Length: 125
Image (cartoon, rainbow, N blue to C red; front, side, top):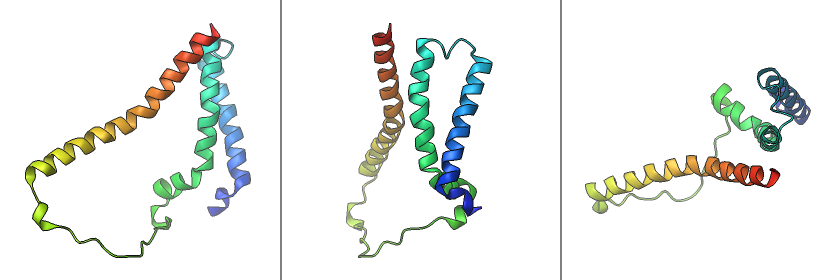
């Protein structure tokens, strides 16, 4: 199965993915590819599919074969946990801010992509 991690298979997968996305687009949205909105989708879809196939080995090892994943071994000193700073209020506050940072980390790239698409659509019309 590791043979599919070599670059010719990644290139072939990228090309097949683009053809499959184009065929799905023509089947379900026949007039979309000839419009401005279709060209905006294509501008964003091609790099996203390319980025997926560049990092395909990470997805493969994480989801398909997690026991074969290369684990990084950290060398160095282990930190000692400071027991004296255990405060339930600060831990609760820290957890709350970590949840907010998690959701902002998920929303931020999509929000940026939507803003860029709106700007491109405004420039194209």
